[in-house]
Length: 433
Image (cartoon, rainbow, N blue to C red):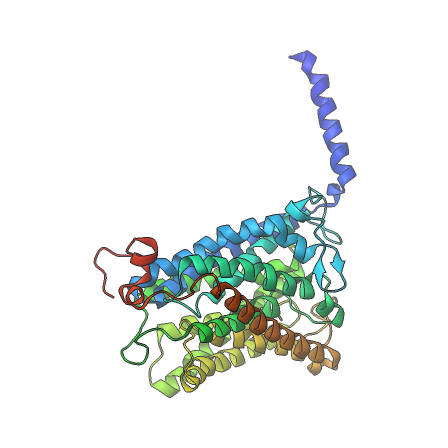
């Protein structure tokens, strides 16, 4: 045994030299742990979204709805590792897209993230969860009427051709980042993009059969609340994790997230109570998510009180979009993907241009209420770009994919339910339509 000791110590010395050569001796264990934990928190948001959406549909479509979120986790994770990360965070090419030098995470290794204190692989994992949940949000707009195979094709190409470029433009050094746009955790990249794409797709596909002729109501409200609670829980990783370290900025983003979600829940319920005479559990869950969406782009740039303002106003605006605009214009955004994520993300991005302060985050900019004017302009331009990309990109993808397959299930299949027809299963032993 003794004769192996010199070899053992030699190995230890060699390993420590190798780690030093890679620069990993600068890695902060605390920051790395926080980012990895945050990645896990963001991960749980997607199955949480499956429960949130799953409880809101009819019982005959609950498994299909959950399956869409669950399968996206797998499909987009593979896409992200192979070339999504390279497209988004590779070396910038003319402000438009990242180079493909990091395809398959080539060269990422255990190196430290440039300008950071964590391994780049931890950043890859964290951003992977963002790439996963974004297309999952779209599914709420076209719930209960889309074929699973077509859904898979659309979501894959949407992630590659719409999400990855937009994420590069804002977070990867692209032209919107160069313009000065701020998006701490995804108002532009995630919520506007997914919400507006969802609205575009639901308009192209058409309304659910029977809508307006008989009530279509959530089949399982406890499941909705469970999903909303998981989203609220995971959102702390979403926003506070975007500080990329266990630091004061993470704490600021954490309390901003809590304050905005709470304020939006209260404001949604108050408006609903005044207008309809009763506060609903669905309203509380929807208000919570609306506040979380609204604060996402601003979480790392605003103080606690502005965060409450953003959340409270966001709750009222999103309630109006869901309860008034959807009925007035007659579109079938089944689970309010646009009303909450599209509208909430739009408000949050604009609000960032109003309340952002360099006292909260020196890496940001001052908004209009703190003497800055350029940021609001940048936010408005970036919001417009996100809308154009979401609408045009989704429309083109829909038309191209429709040349090869159909999006919508047949009338009989829709009446019986997608669970049986698409997956050969039922969510419950005794199940009503």
